[in-house]
Amino acid sequence: MRRPSWIQRIIAILLIGGLYVFMAWTFANGAENTSPLEVVKNTIGALKKAVGNKAEIRRLILERVDFYEMGHRSMGRNWKNLSEAQRKEYLEVFEEYAEVFNRKSVFESIEFINSVNFKYKERLDGDFSEVDVEATLPDGNRVYFLLRLHVKNNQWKAYDFVIENVSIVGNWRAQFDRIIAKEKFPGLLRRLREKIKELDK
View 1 (cartoon, rainbow, N blue to C red):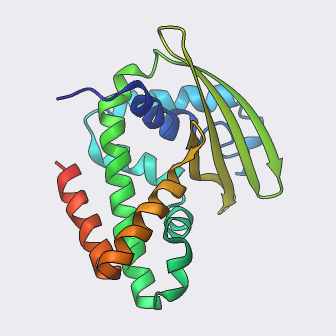
View 2: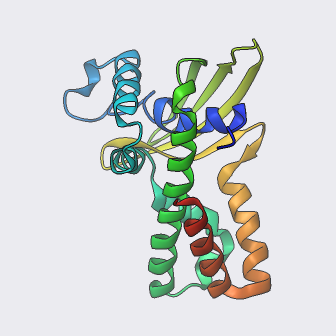
């Protein structure tokens, strides 16, 4: 199996090991006394135990990402043109696509989780937060990320992350715009379902 690039590895590690856990459970009962280090350590430990267990990794991903918000923002201006039934169908397909996409990356990257050093800096604005992440790679090079989170059901959940000034949600939105312009909404659903089959092996 071809190993992912360091960028792909870091995306996967951030998604589960760093993306959400920096501020995870801050507003949950009794969580105010849990340090970010403890949360990161516990999450990494859970990931290591979950290697090879698709169901457990899927559970961890679903806990840490707000797929509704991510999917809504990825649809952009096209959202207002969808019926309630179309929105429901799209969000179901998008959630499966995004979960499978990230689960595959986690499977391929978990062995490298101890090879990257992360530093965090946060900015809070009510129920929204941005977290700057500096990742130092084994070769000494540094990569910078911006993580976007908001509070949902009393937990901080991720809905976007920016890598080298490129937003994942913004990138998907541009792709979806092009597909819908050429193939309409059914074409987008078909493309996403085809990608799910390709990734979920």
